[in-house]
Length: 385
Image (cartoon, rainbow, N blue to C red):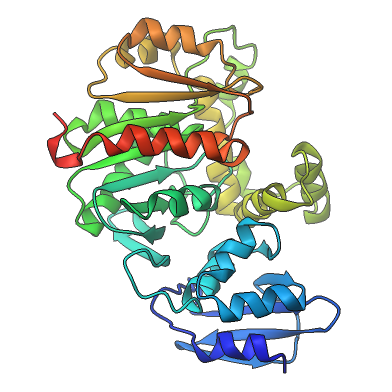
């Protein structure tokens, strides 16, 4: 038995760990030395010989595992530095690091679920102070905000959630999966957490949801930070009539084998076998390879394409409060040309252009997090008009 892994087992705290299925198997790999399964069942953790397919995998060399075991903050630090590799179910893998960190203060990371009228919403929480809620993009999960949670937890109560239909959150069949639906789910999570008002940070589709919250629930919203937000198309949409006729419930069927879907997904994401790219693909596949997750993905993607531009851009002019838009100069999904249309609709909004693509918090974390800290620090939630 590796002594470093045993040290982690000995300090396992089930409180910040969440296993949606009630039981979880995490394979801990000491590169070049062996591997063991950490089995969490009924709040207890036990190391066993590896068997079958695990729910999540954590791998590192022996020296990294020793540092993780000797430093209570070592696990997440090693992950961010690329020394510790997490694969498959990041909800469980990050939960294991949080549960074995021995951090007891408010900055402790915790995995939770909020009981809402829509169903369970999966959460990643840390810190205390004015609340900041983070909303991920299409096909992503709360994991895409893990570095941002770490960056802001020292000054805010941070909550990154899986939008309904994605990650470990509820996936209702036949739901609209449009901005209004997602906003309703987020408000349900706020109510469950006892949060009356929060700042919001949204990336891509999550940015569009944040805008919907600002428009439909202004009393619940402080400042909005929109990272390459999804916006209604202004160009011609040649597939409009076809998509209007295709029901998203067709996603309940899976026409292609898993191996084919996985190969396509990894080929479409640069660096899909390494680092954050690999994590992102794993998180996408985890939901997409289920009938409900696939239907939710198709419905949400369909709604992004079908949104009425005239209605959206007219409504956007009604947005209240302070907003910051962060654009990637290399973003091919939401081109930076959208910025001039936002400036026309919201003359008072702030804008930041970065040399990155569609996910600024992962591609340009230093600049993005510095901008978020500055933007959010100057406006306590309770004082926002």
